[in-house]
Image (spheres, helix red, strand yellow):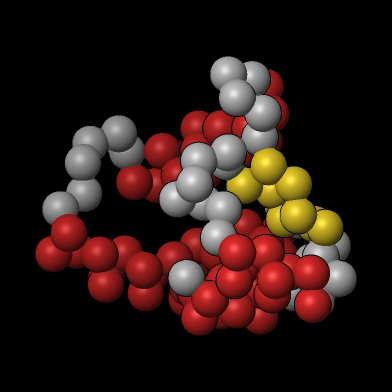
Length: 99
């Protein structure tokens, strides 16, 4: 998870000041928390059963992700192509035009 987190932080055209994750243990990782602390990035997590905590992420899912990829399952054989598209096209567009 650390290499992916480092790639994500480098991809933003601005300094990241905060990182908010879901409350599940699959999203909260001691090494990731240490990396964020070392970079002076505030780390917060959602509260259990509080759907409003993730309102920004859910609205982005609706307005960006679902508009581009739709609602159907994407088979894993397309994962590398989707990731490449996201890195080269979608993420720069969203981050530069909708920071």
